[in-house]
Structures are given as structure tokens and as C-alpha cells.
Image 1 (cartoon, rainbow over the protein chains, first blue to last red):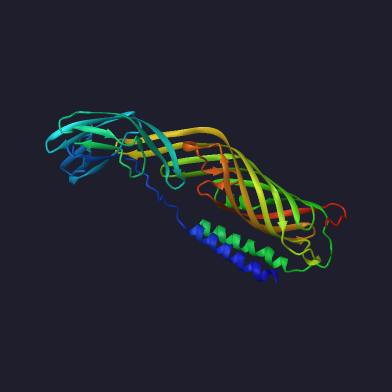
Image 2: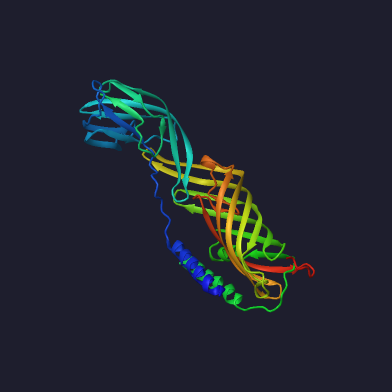
Length: 153
Length: 224
């Protein structure tokens, strides 16, 4: 009598374990941590698209972070090994530098994904050739979608 | 492939106590007893995949046909490595609680057990992340988290079957669900693996044990 109830339970559990054992572990969480910057009009403060934009890290001109047209936002990678990093932004021949001061902290995400660095923005220093102003909207730089800074032209 | 073999092996062991349970006994006794045993899944898994081991014992005191007091001490060592980090954890643990039998107190079933168990678990362990490699636009960052000691508390509910195979010797298995209540290891030092609980990667951690147990009857008290 007992076997009538117990055997199906055992078989189900065995099948479950077999399925689990055949399932490959993969990271299904976002792991890219970028500082999200949106472009805005200094006059209307509305989100705008920039016609032509090149962005690279200072002293790494051969490696573009972004090169395109009609962009209204970008993601900038901060350097976890340093407490500041500088980006060069070229917009239609005019260039500006944006220096970000921040501190970084390591965080464990999951077994499949491992560790990521999160950042906390402390200060932003920038030139004003094409850029009018920069507002810090959210100091926490994490894998989420929330905008960190607004760049006004 | 190793995992498929591992679980196929488990399947055959899983069904063995069910077949043996079918053998009905004639004697009527429910003496108080002390049982000592161990979980063989840890050594078996270690033999198949030597990335870590888990050794745990099973001590229980039968109060009557229905209730048992249980203590499960153990030690485990866990190593995990993937493309961007390496993790190590080792430490001891103890789980205490009760088993509640669901079988009717009749002669044919008094030497067997089928029921549920409830446990509180305490784990004290040392863990470290000796290598972390993160790549981004600025290059590769290599860092590590040194060894640190932590403790964790967890709860467990289980369903188990144990059956007598010959005089005073039982075998059986348990399917367990565990949940973490508290861990002193947080943020970047979060424990990936907690000895006695298992992987700390979801709100509920499943586990499986297969026991070999020696039962020592205490006199001829009925225990009921």
C-alpha cells in the first residue's frame, strides 16, 4: 500500500534531480555597470538627440566608447581601479572633457554571474566648450536603467 | 555526464528502501532508542566530483512511535571556480530538531519511519574569494577577498523514509528544503555556500540525503 504512494513520489523526485543536473547554469542578470548619461537642451531642458558624437577615455583615443549619430543617451564605463576617470566628448568638431570623481565597491551578484563593481559619483568636473551644464541625478551607478547624469548642450 | 551518472546512481539507491519497506514485520515493539548514522551522499558526490566534500552524522532519540529528537553535526568544504572568480568555503555545522512519524503505530511498521522533519541549523565557517577578474573598457581588474569567518542560521523542512534492512540497521533518504534566516556575511562578502545549508543563491535551497543508521534500543520500554 505504501509503495503505491511512495514510488511515484520517488520517481518524480528522481526525474526532477535529473532535469536539474542537465540544466546548464548561466548568468541571466545584467552585469554591465555603466554610468548612464542623457542629453538635454539647456534652453528647454528636454531630452535631445546629438547629431554626431564621439566619446573615448582620456589617453585611450584609439578605443571609442561610442561613435554615432542621433544619440540621446550613452553609457560610460567607470574605471574600478581608479577613483577618477576622464572622458573626451567630441560633438560636431567641438570637444569637451568630463572628469568623474567616484568611489567603487565590490558586490557579489550571484553564483553564475560572480562579482561586479558598483560606483558612487562624488563630483563631476567638465569643460564648457559645447556642454553648458551637467546635473547629477542619481549618484549610484549600478546595472539598473536609471539615469545618473544629465548633460546639457 | 558526471551529474547524470550521479543522479542515476541516486535513483537506484532511492528506490531500495521502498522495496524493503514492503517486507512486513510481525513483532510489536516501539522501544525508546538512540540511533547513530551518517549521510553517504557527501562522500559519494566527493568520489564523483572532488570539488568539495560534506560529511555529516545523524543522531536521534526516539521518544515514542511518533516523535524523535534529532541532531545532525557535520563539516563541509566547498570550492567553486568559473571564468571570472574563484570561491572557497569550509566550516562546521549542526542541525537540531525533530522528526514526526506519519506511519500508524502497528507492528508491521514500527521499525520503519516515514514522516516529516523540522530543523534549526547553525553554521560557522571561513570563506574567501582568492581571485576575482573583471574586464571593462579600462582594462582588467584583478582583486580578491581575504578569508574571513562568518556564521549563519537557517531552517529546514524535510520529508524522509527510513526502513530497517536487518537487525538494528536502517537505511533511508530525505528530501529537504532549507531557507536562510541570517548570515553575518553580507555585500561583497556574501557567502556563496553555507556549510550545512548548501548554496546560498536562492530563497529556498533543496537538498537530498541518503542515510545508513544503526539503532540502539533502550531496554524494553514501549515508548508509546
